[in-house]
Amino acid sequence: MMSNGAAGVMSVPGAGGLAGVELPAIGDPVFLVLGDGVNLRSKLESIDGDTFSVAAPLETTGLAMFEPGQEFEIFWAPPRTRVVLPCRLVVVSGSAPLRWILTPSGAARHDNRREFVRGGAGAVVHLDAEVSGQPAEGVLLDISEGGLRCWIDEATSLTQGDRVEATVWLGTAEAKLSGVVHNVRDAPHGDPGQHLILTFDTKEELARTIRQYILAWEIGERRRNKRTA
Picture (tube, rainbow, N blue to C red):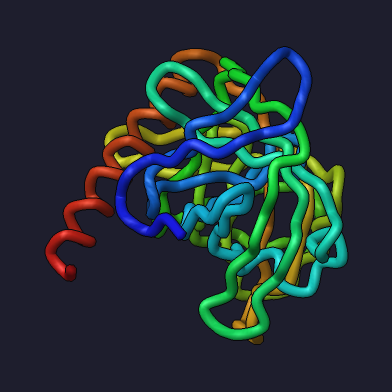
């Protein structure tokens, strides 16, 4: 099993003569694709032959779509591109820390769509919608150029498809986002409140601000991890 910080190469089935794919380094972030601009952050834990394991995102706890046999895409973001890999979920570990064992189900591909980084946390998200009973604000869990996820401490009457105006401070600038509710879920593991997921489209200037914010956040996270290691 490969468990150091180096990237690994494994065989991948698929057309086009692709014999292998270089996975990111152990511990690097990978993202699970749910569609509609919503991706869940995880990280690569280990590589073993034609399988590899990732940390199970908390938001997927109890979701039937993430059971052994299910197929979905993951991606990671080396410089100037995004590598997308179709995968099949083989095993869900039954004890903490929860991990998923995946195996490739098709050929990896490069995808240069803009919305390929997600991160950030802690900022206040001000919410405004023409729906009675919705919360006035939440706390940012993560954001990308295509959507954001925030924690709200009270039940909301917002449902999938509702339009919401969200305002969030991204370190150096305020972002005003016109979004659509993708999903509302109870916070995982018995935590109070709910997770509200919004999707939106961004123009290049705002997209650049989001990318810069995430980059600064990632650098800060690495520095904190080094101090606590």
